[in-house]
Image (cartoon, rainbow, N blue to C red; front, side, top):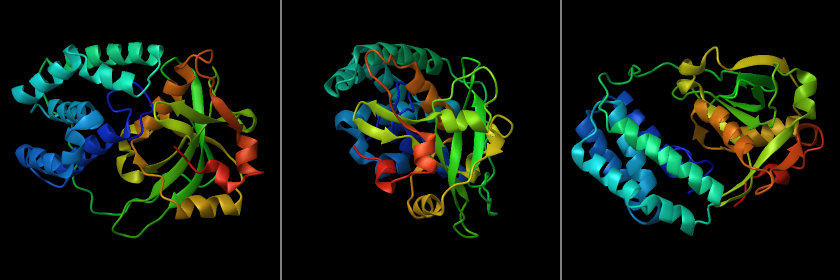
Length: 288
């Protein structure tokens, strides 16, 4: 599965397990039943190189709902304290800097979940009405990074499936990292983030974000301008599903990529102008 950062949920395995846990809760399942479903649905993840990502995601979801059991906590502690997860990262050829940061993330994670939550995270009611895409194709969106600077992305497409499903947006990330809110010219001058991390090779940072999970980020992500998107780009991203990501990952993916040392891992870039005006669609297809 793809790994794109050092955080607990910065990989496809953890995200898939965590999101499915939340989905089961929203569908009204009790915690014990949710755990049974997760163990059944992702049994292939419970072994091999995915086992730590699986148990970390499950443990985090349980902790957030005041339901982390001693058995799961003990397994998490074992994988962290015995260096099992770090050994996996080493086998997957993680850099020294990334492994060092991963150790910090694991230490912080374990310290957090060892203290039981007093109250579960606010649960969302099951949504039965259609939510259209949040943004329009061509919208330039911006948001603050943890360093206080602004970054942004460009909406390449909208998915309006049907009345039984949620709308979504396809957004491409940029390397904007500046003190002031970006304007149209900043987006045109920016570069697309292309990740080379772990088992991701020349991975264009394009993801799809469901309207269903935007409520927590209303006000944090705002439209600052709009750019005309070529019709063939819109058609391509309307027909190709990128895989849903949590809106928070729009921000953390950029932070992760910008924080990596260019001396040790040069960030490959493709200009936004090339993507939007002179696009060859094959250049945007993520490949491993």
